[in-house]
Length: 315
Image (cartoon, rainbow, N blue to C red; front, side):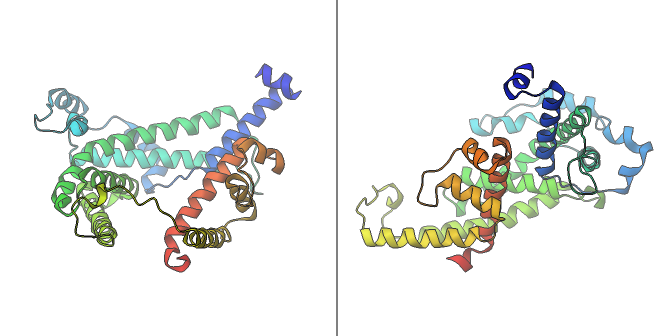
């Protein structure tokens, strides 16, 4: 901090203030979704909510006794090191995860003044928010790990429809992660029921898409996808394809905020120039390199969502 203060000719306190503002902005830009429950506002319930899950000693004993099946692929061996949760343990962990996010969200509100500008934040408050989010993510990871064998079970049933089991498994894991984030534990349902529905719904969509993609290139040869690619190119076709791609990109960029659009164009070199570094863009726009990175990530996420939402419209 002393080195930074000397370099920018600022006091230590002003440098700490800048650092806290950057941390606060990063926390504000981070998505924070959770399932709210009225018990979260009951202070008398706080200790019970954050307590270790029920029957933890028995669970740890079961974990130590678990053995990996001999026929399990090496890539899946780690899945058999984590026991399944019973319904009471599952409910406790989902409540705990959402409660920790709720507490972090409440603290995060204090970072912004009613005017919309950043408040004078303290390092202690930022550390507390980070700690709550770290704890919530640890609980989330535990829930995911305990249910990954469910994905394997469902993927095996659909493997005959797809040539790549591990691609199917990867898609299923993404569905599982989303299910953990969206599951409303307060309804009393078993998570496996909800997650199974979400995973199978995703497979019902992704498998036909994959089959359709492959059927477009059927030639009657079984080694179709192992054949060497045709490297011959047609210049007019390439130019037309590039022009169409440029048109689609520009259509999508119209949906972004002006500054986001400018950063994407500068970063990718879309104005017939070389792509610029985050630092150079920051210097030109008068903002920090970190802020440029945040805006670039946010804009790219928007573009991906827009590309999916408007794929028929812009194709």
